[in-house]
Length: 127
Image (tube, rainbow, N blue to C red):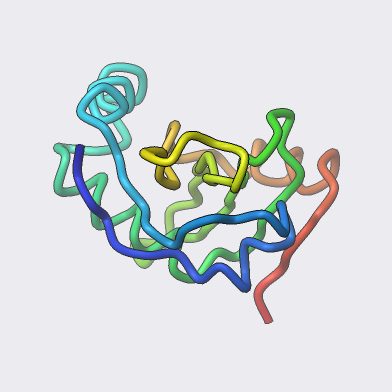
């Protein structure tokens, strides 16, 4: 498990008011998942860490997720690539040892980006 930093709870309250911690982690299993499923998107774990921190710190959009207590984040990264990130938020109802955790992260094409914004409810938009 890797500590990636902290989330700004005030931004992520649009997903749930019940966020229990600001700590953000990613597990080795999720790193392997991202590297195996999206090999063209990221070179290594450090590339994932840097991009996740960028996306979580200043999301462009948070849209409604199909899963409860999950933040579906859209972000144009500094390298101008569009990305989507899913973070499971820890709530007061979750076990004590849970943290906010990265589920998946990938780059998306313009067409997919537009489809998501057109079909999902926008919960947060950066100013």
